[in-house]
Image (cartoon, rainbow, N blue to C red; front, side, top):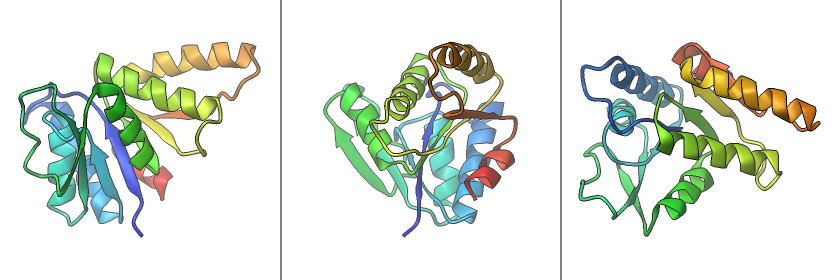
Length: 171
């Protein structure tokens, strides 16, 4: 059975953007290395990951919610519908064997915080949480400093400069 990698990221990036290209190439790398992917199922990096993975034979799970009028992206192979955002975040976490966090906004921050807290509190088995892009390094550093003061685990979230490093870590 192939492992499922849940990827969190921005819905705002578009084809031609650097972040879209990074997500597309990550989808390719994950699929070529035997992983399936799970995303929020809509546009932006979710679409890019889905496209790269789908074109390379991976199952692509899109976890969607009906509060937006958008249709899911055409690259998902299985849709999981949720009634609200919190259910969606929980389902994205439930389906993932590991998590990759790409550049994003408050929604991506919510997803990172949720999976980090569940792991930190021992409410789920350990699963890698891997951040890409320098935007997360400061947040991870600040949180690890606080967690060290509180004598809690400080290595639950790892930061990487390249998508190749992330995939190598998963292997």
